[in-house]
Amino acid sequence: MRREFSRTFAGKHPLFRASHTETGVRWQDNIYYLWWEYLRRHDGYRQCCERGGTGPYSKLYSDFGDVHAGEFKMWWRQRCVRLFAEPPSPVGVWALSDEEALELIELGRADNVLLVAIPLDYQRRTITLGINKILKESETRKRGEKRIKTSKARYPIAKAFDVMALKATLRCYDLKQANPKMPLWQIAQEVGVSARLTADEIRENGATAKDKKLSMTSGVSRKLRQAEAIIENVAKGRFPIGN
Image 1 (cartoon, one colour):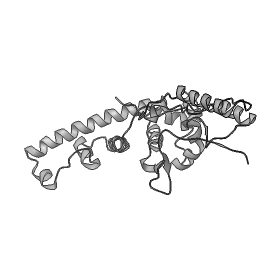
Image 2 (cartoon, rainbow, N blue to C red):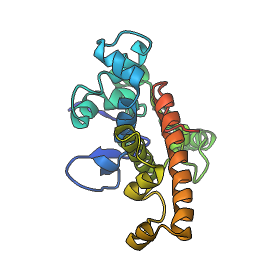
Image 3 (cartoon, rainbow, N blue to C red):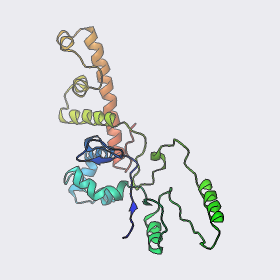
């Protein structure tokens, strides 16, 4: 049986049935789903999709395709490996055939995979010492270093992220786009950006309510600026980069 090389992701992959596994998370709470959603908000990229991939964003389109054409699940299955997978690595330890070695090199092997030549006529002790020396010299990642820092994906996740914050930011943006005249404090009330006003505070509209509204307005204003910056950068292939 032909042995295959595994492809992994720096971020957890989206799950469409289970809600959580060691390597996956529910798709609505997934960083790659949010990447797709933020890209759908970029007007210039939307126009590129409408033109069939021509124009200023044609290069990005050749990789990401028409993100408006269907649902995330289908898009993910068609694009995930090409866009976000780390270089391939073998599962387990085995002697590579010539064909397998060439395939691994052509695919671009992962940094944590070594190709080692072992002369089988050497004594086992000499071979073991040589392998141990190679392993020691090849330990480049420090203990505790996050994998995201060493991602070699075609489109790596640009920085550490907070999924819930990204979702709240996008929801603020969508509410403002759908309701341009809605006061920002009401958007905060709807999304839950900060402490919500109680029914009594809204009815009385006293000093406490006014102070809260100012704080809520400021919080949503920051999120709207953040959303616009993220949307601008996602069309450059970088996510999630904000202000």
